[in-house]
Length: 370
Image 1 (tube, one colour):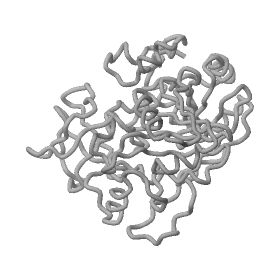
Image 2: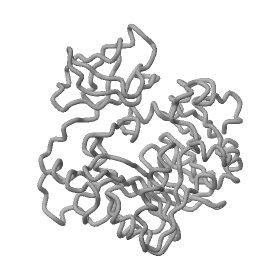
Image 3: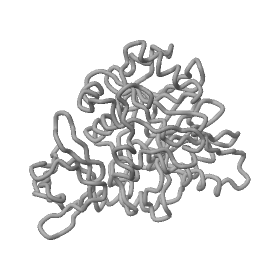
């Protein structure tokens, strides 16, 4: 989609942006993605009110075929995958031994292969961990990023737009509520905590219904054809800036941007979609269980409103947040929102009050009470 008129690449604006193809993927032909197509605010409004097509083909794609793929990943990750059926999707995390978030992946099972798509720059770490844990399991994980590309239809009309690709209707996402502290064993159903409907695409790949719209995994050789078909049907392109603004407003954390090396799942609202609290043992489970039973993770994810009086420059990810002379957190993703102005996801200490007056660089910041 970088050849569409008006496209401006992410790296032409920010050479250090993590939203670039990994070097190995770029060498294999994976191209840059667009930050915008000439009018970022219009593109945001499009995603908020209708539907737009976002190029997210820089995301890493890991394919896991093999007879034991589901039971194997069930034991390694936070999600309950044992009963994951064909044409179902979900989310999972890989945690450190101390329960810190290391990897996040979206999941799709198609009956022959389990697909994981993850953050650009994270493919090597995820695949390296999986290869290290293979032992004698009948699985064959591989990096499939050069073979397949992820596109996203985003907005309230995304479920209708996917019909342009001859995809049957997709059921709405189903996410279980997080049980209270010290819940009874067996209270949480033995199934993925998030369940996303998936349908095959006629030309290969699949469509997956997700909270922000519909993800499309397509063969890279067919990507231009899929894009043209959607555009011929009236779907307009929107850049990654617009997608990120919608994601931030929806309070959805991005691992590696809205997290740090100490982040645990409960701090950034990843329990509901990606962590099953009543499944068998996995790495980092003790921390997850202990924090949940206590009911109070040490930090929390918040939406900040930045006043933007002194500067239009958005704070970089990792910028400290201060309260008086104390550092109380850090900024994750900051965006210019078409309605809300400068907003950002941030992680702050739980003791910080909702009405606290915070500082982020030159800007005053306030927590959205939601």
